[in-house]
Length: 348
Ligand SMILES: C[S@@+](CC[C@H](N)C(=O)[O-])C[C@H]1O[C@@H](n2cnc3c(N)ncnc32)[C@H](O)[C@@H]1O
Image (tube, rainbow, N blue to C red; front, side, top):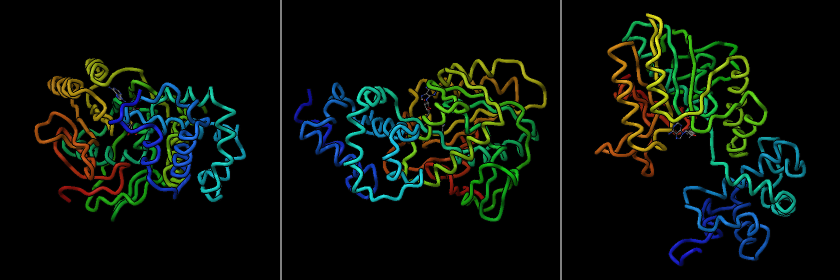
């Protein structure tokens, strides 16, 4: 039961974007009205009335709808999805969407169980910066990558993408993904060879399968053409570069990997992006302890693109306006945007 102090789902839908300028703004406004009128939206969200705001059931539903469209099960909606070539006015979408909602209630209700999950390949710009500095400091150019919170593992393909920044470029000329607008004036990327790539996630996504790729696409908003194009490029790279993904929590997994014997002359890079804010504090502390303990045995670097800690280091600073930073072994090397570029080096 919703108490008077808590906004109803309809109120949350209305304020989520607060405008009708794109498809999701329109659909959430219409779903709010439909909820008030006792329409199919009530049936879809039955049992979710008391969901915590941070669960964003409305975004889960929109992703479920997007998956129907991506699978070709609602072709009449494609004209409203710019990433599928659609250019219809989103204001006209509700008349087409409402019958699709009614026809797929069970499937859309199931989609509410799937937490929003993305994998932003351009964040590997932060890894390029961190690895370059770690290679310079260690003198070791053979690298094994370990990535907790890896989602589909697209962040393990740093050497398969090309990056173009202010006065520099790095990566294969024929890369399926070119990340431009990287900024980072003064960056001197180092050459290195990735000899191992392994990640873990509490909910790993196998994006080499169509179902996994569709899952990732469905959480990228359909009018964000650049992000969709980047995702497709990264998926093409993944198709030819195997990564190992384990279903595991971050800290225990990192400790186990670091305990494994490795060849000499190998730099182990523990890397993660935009996942630490979901970990309990103890998990972050346990991961840092595991890395520190391993340093006495093997060359290891810890690269992170995460929200900075609060001053008392008890939680990541997620206050509005705060952007992620790129850290190497706790030292801030750069600031960057939520999806990676542009990046600004602290000392260029
Ligand atoms: C916002 S996504 C970021 C994914 C990827 N690192 C990126 O930057 O694109 C956060 C990821 O962290 C994972 N995650 C959350 N808590 C975790 C934990 N304790 N251990 C491992 N993975 C976790 C989620 O399942 C999700 O895939």
